[in-house]
Length: 467
Image 1 (cartoon, rainbow, N blue to C red):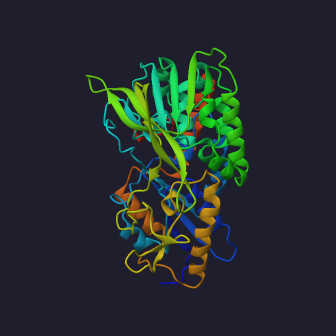
Image 2 (image 1 turned 60 degrees about the horizontal axis):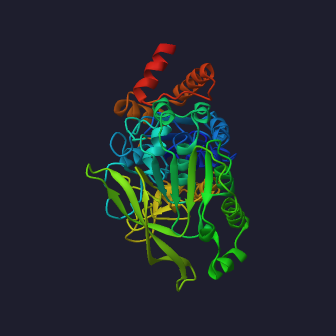
Image 3 (image 1 turned 90 degrees about the vertical axis):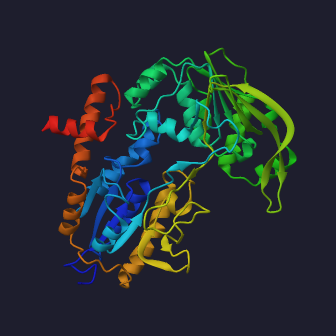
């Protein structure tokens, strides 16, 4: 075959996944002046942008503005999007190796960690991932149901996702109606009878994973008072020491939650109780097998041999009434068929983004990883840029020295024929652009940012009707 990167044979790259890491990698690769590059981006969903569309909270519209950058990247010559294509079944790793010089995996961390406590399988016990996907209109979760007729809910975890879930449960109907929350979630949330929401953190405020803007927002909710117990945000000597060497984010977090503790409730209709130094030990059920309460234990922080502060139970228990429990204690990547996987860390094994063979530790020629499937579930949207650029630089280094795959049929037309034969109902980027216009127009009519289509069938029907 002709050397990849020559004028008559561009470097052909398949990107599996269409979230931030995928687009940042595409951006870096297509900016090269000395190397012609073509990108084919695949996603199981009919729409691009990953968690920016399906994970960012609907009341955080400004964060979603990053898609304008991604749209510019997708508009460059040589970029194609193939949505509604399932990697591993409809298109396999072997297929991609036959058509591309390099493959970049950016599939994120798709499952959540469990609490590992009794009662976790009771009706009314859910992952925060499911709830977030439901209210954001993810096609896989649109049919889920959550019993919002209960009076109290508990969110286990103090990361930004946990904060998002608690905030959405506390928002007023008027606040939610001004967002792009999915219609199938808006109506039940309007009728919600939840009046008390608990957020539980197993360590103290110094170790909390949320960011200051997220924390500050909890104190400015129209319909809920943020309540913090002073004794749970009073720092012990170990936490004081940790705070002294911490960055601005941590210091600001502590300042905010200690401010909540010093304030008195104003009498808003809902209470948002933010707890620290407590861990769930059992989800309690009623006679019908539904969640009725959460049993928690008090913790104290102790320093381990590696210098970290870990929570240890102190044999003081409490029971919190709860009709719903949402766990938000971390996420895990899942294996991709035909791709190496680290079962212990739940990531694709890699060295600076180069996929490695678990048996030998050596790089797998032409295959790379980025985002959460590369490093684990950490950071915010912007964190993926430096991560993706690191991998992309390795891809460029390998391409320039000829260390790529040797595909049998590297032409763009051959790849498209294969995709059409396997997935005749795929969605192109042009399809997405039209869907975006239709969703935005529907939203404008209702005074909202957009009204989402929440299934591939609804999207295809809307495209056909608009022709």
